[in-house]
Image 1: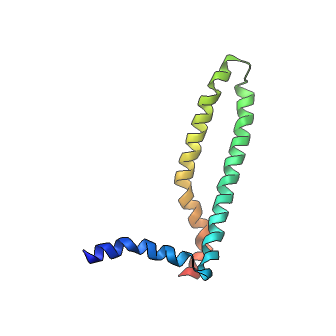
Image 2: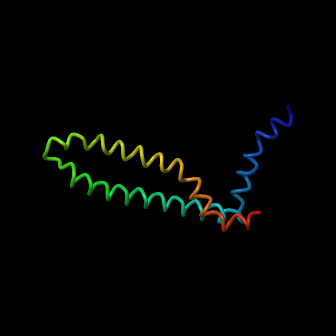
Image 3: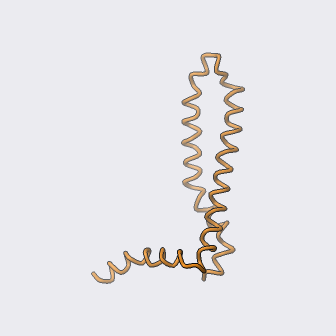
Length: 102
């Protein structure tokens, strides 16, 4: 039972290591790059999707009522891409730093 509790507390010990001054840059640089990449992807996707919506679903026609539904589908698709792609991209971005942490 003691080993189980110690095993459950190991992530907290790892979290304490992250906030040490020497490790902070190896964690923050990949994290900030990941946030920047996914934020840029969200902005570009929204920008081009808005252009697509203006071209194919103009607001002045009856098709304009489908715009909220299309935005919902776009948001769900982006959320799924974020869910599945975050780990892959995070590992690619963090890979140069992993050898320094090992």
